[in-house]
Image 1 (cartoon, helix red, strand yellow):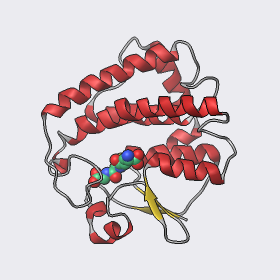
Image 2 (cartoon, protein in one colour):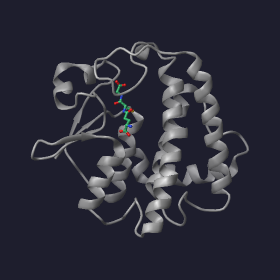
Image 3 (cartoon, protein in one colour):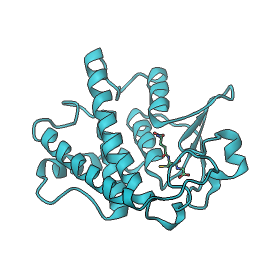
Image 4 (cartoon, helix red, strand yellow):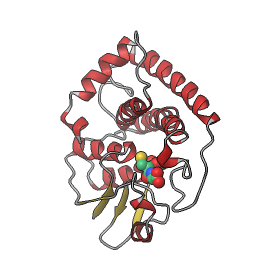
Length: 211
Ligand SMILES: N[C@@H](CCC(=O)N[C@@H](CS)C(=O)NCC(=O)O)C(=O)O
């Protein structure tokens, strides 16, 4: 297997933390998104969407989407499960993970990509070389969604040590990466959200957070 990665980008980081928690190592190829290497012919031949992370299997099959790659890896390496052991846990983690992804990661992307000069003509990830202009009004919508994300996190974490219960899951990993991504646009855990700040401190202290 080969993992196409981008050290500075938030979605590849979700996968690296997942792999670090499970002790999985896969040879990596670094692709520079800021310089547009992901929209050059060499990488588009691997993944026509130009998205990272992308996993290439030994038989040549390539696929993207963090959760698809995590599902594949969890099936291959079932120890230290991060997607749930029982059907109940699996459903709960999926639900929480998607909320963290949509209201945390994607809202962060909406704020960041509609204002950063490097993305003015590629405001949506996954278009390959296609031009999709930024829409500045979406910055405000993204910011409001992020506010909702922090309210949701705080109300949940007042009652549970990790989002899905007593142990770390992919929902926590996605939420952690979303929060660090929000720092790029000067947003973050609102002052006074103590349960979220405590949880963040515990997650950030795990060696996997440096992955
Ligand atoms: N839904 C995708 C999102 C992946 C994504 O947005 N990746 C970004 C890096 S964080 C990317 O590849 N961007 C390419 C670009 O901006 O052109 C996933 O979960 O893997």
